[in-house]
Image (cartoon, rainbow, N blue to C red):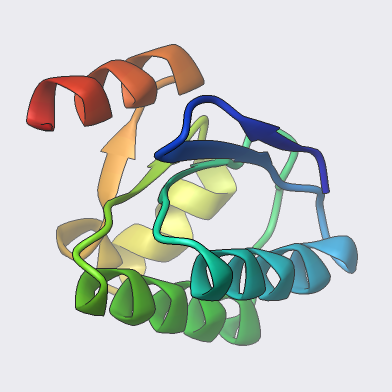
Length: 110
């Protein structure tokens, strides 16, 4: 999982497709537990999410909300976006078209 520390407060995580996606999300959880960071998850190479991946995303969101940190999902493929729409999670997470836009969103919201 390529983790790009954008600043002292923000990391960008370039997620891999399954089966690595599950491990990547778990590593993000551990990283966030160690340091209070805002996170941009780049789904550019992810073509499918399963219920386990969705559960990990929800757990990560809850963990970050408790620490008053922000999570932005970006570069979603049509398949991943459809899965989040069907499950109603499009209303739960914050989304952006690209990593650049996600970083700008975090900076503006600060």
